[in-house]
Length: 235
Image (tube, rainbow, N blue to C red; front, side):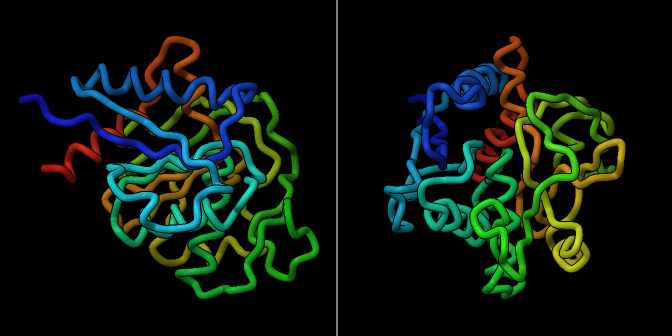
C-alpha cells in the first residue's frame, strides 16, 4: 500500500493572473517527482479561513504571494498554527511579510504591530515600503551558513526574482531578529530578504518568489525542502 500523498495548504487568495500562483502547482509537482512522492494541494482563501480546524489534515502550509490578503487574520491564523504546532511552513513574498507580523504580535507581544501596506500611519508598522520597489526584478542573495535555506539550496549565494514593495521596517529589525526569528538571507546591499525560526523543524520565509523557477523548468529548492520536511515529520 503506497503512502498517502503529502497534503499542502496554499494559504492565500488564488488569482490565475498572478505569476507566482501559476507557478505554485508546478513547483510542488516538480518537487514531489524529484523526491519520489505524491503531493496534493488545496487553496485556502483567507476570506474563508476563520478556524484552526480548517487546517487539520495538512502536512505543511505555504503562505503565498498576493498581499494584501482579503482577510489578513486568516493568513495570520494559519501562520500561527504552523509555528505553534511545529508544522512545516514556507512563506513567500506576502507570506514573508505576514510571518514577520504574526511573530511580532504573538511571540514578541507587540499587539499594535501592523503592516504598513494596510496601516501606513501605525505607530508600529513592522513592514514598510522598501527603499526601492522590487517589481519584476532579480538579484543575488547571500545566505547564512548552516541555515535551513542554505541547506535547501546547497549554496550560500543564490539569484531569485521578486515582485514586492514591502519588507521589514529597519526601525524594528533589531528586536524582531534578536531571538528565535533569525535573518537567513540578505541582498548585495545588506537588506533582509529571508528569515527562519530556530526552534522549528522547518519555518522559512522569503521576500523573493522562489516558486517562479518552476515556470522556467526548474525545481525550486524550497518547495523540495518543504515536502522533505513533511516527510521527515511523518516518520
